Amino acid sequence: MTAARPLWLDYLTFLLPMMASNILQALFGTINSIYLGQMIGVEALAAVAGFFPVMFFFVAFIIGLGAGASVLIGQAWGAGEPAKAKVIAGTTLSVALLGGALIAVFGGSFARQLMLALATPANVLDAATAYARIMMIAMPATFAFILMTSMMRGVGDTVTPLFALSVSTAIGLVVTPALIQGWLGLPKLGVASAAYASAIASVVTLLWLALHLRRTNHALAPDMTLLRGLRPDPLLLRKVLRIGLPTAVQLVVMSLAELVLLGLVNGFGSDATAAYGAVNQVLSYVQFPAISIAITASIFGAQAIGAGRVDRLGAIVRTGLLLNLIMTGALVLLGYLLSRLIIGLFITDAHVLELAQHLLHIVLWSTVPFGMAGVFSATMRASGTVLVPMLLSIFAIVAIEVPVAVALSRIIGVDGVWIAYPAAFCAMMLLQMSYYLLVWRKKKIRRLI
Image (cartoon, rainbow, N blue to C red; front, side, top):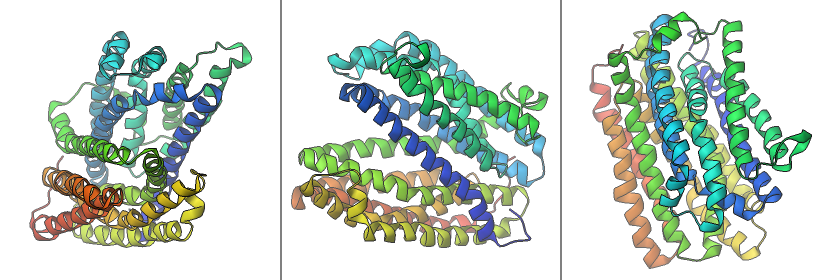
């Protein structure tokens, strides 16, 4: 943040590259699925999908770890202590590498047993096992890549992560089809091609990132200070985990609730399931600005606290709320105006298209309160207040979203499932805002490091 220009301009400078990264990552996943589905067949998609719950659990932990580290790094950076920021990064990275190494050893050794435990269909078991084994063996590189891009936000850098993700995506988009088809004399690796491509992309991008950070004298460039930080500091690690673990738990709970809602949708037939997939594709893109604005609020809040400028927190929240209303609101409006055209990109059947468009109209507007809830909880996280905001979000999911979906789906059909989303998001916004206004703002905010 700079005092010389408007806060909203700092917000945009920080969050626009982050939004571009999110969109690029989503597009890469979509294109990779197209490669597998078109070049190998539908069974390839089924084999990859079988590993998704495991991958999500691992990534949720790393996202949580990154959230905790970026808050502490942001406070150290705001306080003008770059060496401490680098020690925090080293400590966090050491845990990620250790966890990744354990997954690589045990997951690589027992991949087949894991896929059997997940009830993987027999016709895709071998392919799913090969994919899962490579993904888990490559986990140290994957963890390091995700974590480094997250921690760089703590020092105000979202451009380098965008460059890194661009490199990774470019490699993956070339290597995946090359391994599927056996181009340039490479072996044909089937479904495992996507896993090998992901591993190669992560390793090459990490090497590029290390060289780039050294060349540009980046705040988190690998040097002796960072390497010394790879010997974990127990006190710093406890602080990182205290902030990061609740974030990971919340992600897992949201995922489990989503599985419950998907089960309800599946009960209304394949048309409803197809509509569910299309609507969620649209929602994921509309939520990008909301999520990016919340992360920005967290980093800016952490830097302000580190600099002793607690008085700026109110402006950070107000600016985040306003930008969420404008940016997310604009996408929502565009979604309503072009809903038929957008849904038509995913669905051709006229009946399913009408159903998906109707369901999108029910839920789309609630992305705005979802984003506002994120701004409140992210700002509180910047001070280390994470437990109560997490519990409030979980309450909205478990006590409102799921029961409303179950009850209304029995009364009014599939519409009831989608009404549950706005109910939960509005409740989440009201709960987070109430705690922020009535409790958190009255607290004495202190640096955590």
